[in-house]
Length: 273
Image (cartoon, rainbow, N blue to C red):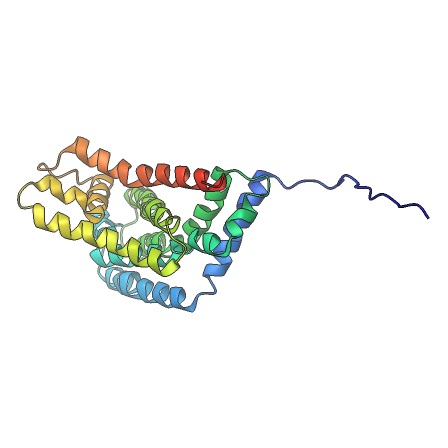
């Protein structure tokens, strides 16, 4: 009896597109996060403390229109800032660290997927999750206050609503690149979570210490950078003692420097370095 050689037949199915792969990564991450009881507990607590009470209070106060100052104050609230950092640390801590720990990182890149597609999927999942706190509640607050206004003109209110949408997008995106970068540097999610929170906390302390020497030191604190951005967005301008060029550099740097380092990190890990 002769030996029957193994014959491989080419697969005749249709390959999934890069967009579909990115969507699957993001959807899987988002669903996994919604199963975390700890995350859901902090999410619910944050929504109640940061948004529910202010919505009820401001809705009961007579107002002719949706006030830009009210929304600027809400977005600049330190409690909102602290919960955003805490949730970003919890959400992003295992975004890449868990893949490195379980060696599933290798499986991702054994397929026809590039570093940018992998990052798009992971960051898409983190953005979707964090938007449950940073995007949806502020928009709901603006809509509720518009619905309870006594004035009949909605032109000014719609303008504030549009600014609130932009502010909510920035609030959602601002901390994610750095948080995911920290996750890519360790295989322990606990280290990534603590490292993310402590990094922002240390920057806040440094800013508070040196601001009396030079007001521009306040830009070391990402919370101050966001507050200045919100005030400018809602039409209240930038403080006269703050350098506009330095503010712009810090605002862009907080987002794009970690994002660039993250891309380089993932690209190197993808080729085994």
